[in-house]
Length: 551
Length: 58
Image (tube, each protein chain N blue to C red):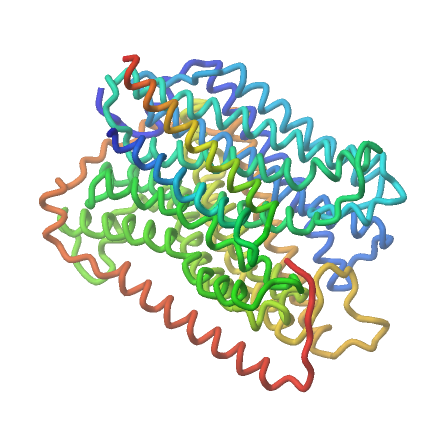
């Protein structure tokens, strides 16, 4: 049977597999709701509109980071990974190693509970959980580290189930090559397994120390940097794969470059992950100058896989739309199903990636990293990526598949269509305020940057904008998460069957020019160059030299 | 060789080379990186073998 779309394929999956996907998604959305409420509170504290006790303020910041950056992203990625492996990988969608996937989900849930409990009964460690901070309360630190280790083991279980599902599908098809999406899912699952190893590498020594079974880790920050590099790449890889799968569903056709070329692009993520990690070490004082230079050069490749995937997806979309008769400079965009919430989420996700990518290239310049890494520039740029790009993509992907799990469309469709634009607008306020503040030296990881009235006036104005933008962004994301949770709880109207889409044949599509994506990438390159040059000029004008610690 | 197996094997080779560089080149000398990327190389080798064996068993 030919692949007829993600939603119809998942709808044919066994009820127990749908129950697992639904449970993982419910856990993801609950973690997201919890994380953004904590984040909003932190943002309002920054703006002076809330005043939790200092220790509780850092607990809120820790809960925000762990719930939103770790558990929301990994519950959601786990669910979508299983969905793609099952729907694209097998003729009759069903999970292999199902008990392992359930066990993985349970371990992740236990890990979430452990990190949050440890945060609120013990010392708040922030999401990188330096053991030095936990010297006075090792018991709660042990619980916190156990939570991260539970997340790692759970993710490994889910990833192994996804891989086994794809392998079972390959066997059923007589060993025929996987589809590009199935191969991408296996590559994604492989990177999840490596990230689980990186979690263990970073936090097992700390857990042993907290349990009194080992020395205080001397190089926790190095392990964290390696893990953090994976945690930046992994959700982006998943995001791009979800884009690819959704656009395939939207248009009825895959890449005009062929399945094999798409596999090469997905494999590029894995090729570029290890060599580009050196830039996280720029602030290590003992790093050899040659390694710094090598890290600078290699860091320029960090965006290559994502840009390559963007080109494949958008060129294919445009070429197919033009072959189907769409005219005008941007007429091809009308080929997207704008009535579906996922399309709006994807549009804002792509725009956010362009902005986040631009600022990330500023930050990874070796000469600027030391000056900006302890400023609000860092949370400002990475919210473009974590909220605008990754979270909106995952939310859009979830909105897309909920009808296949419940038979009902998520309620409040108009609200779901509007929310990405509202979230995007709030994100612009938050992130541009943060970038401006960061360039003016506004520190991150402090609850009140007023310093008893001694702080520069610009910091106060920026902090107010951060509070407004951050709270509005959190409110939008919370509303999206609650609407999807209601959808999982079977609120909403019965889902209409997805309209059958017949894509223009590859042979017809490749005869049409598709210039939008290459032109967008050219604009992006110019923006990166301009932003980096501006930041260098600004920093050269500073009367002092500064250095900081890693992000 | 099956294209899926070949791609996974290529990833293994690159990660193994990087892990070796992190472990053996004195200027780099990053045991943590060698450990993680080395484990990653093992993961992708195991994946390639798993997929290759599944083809033979069909």
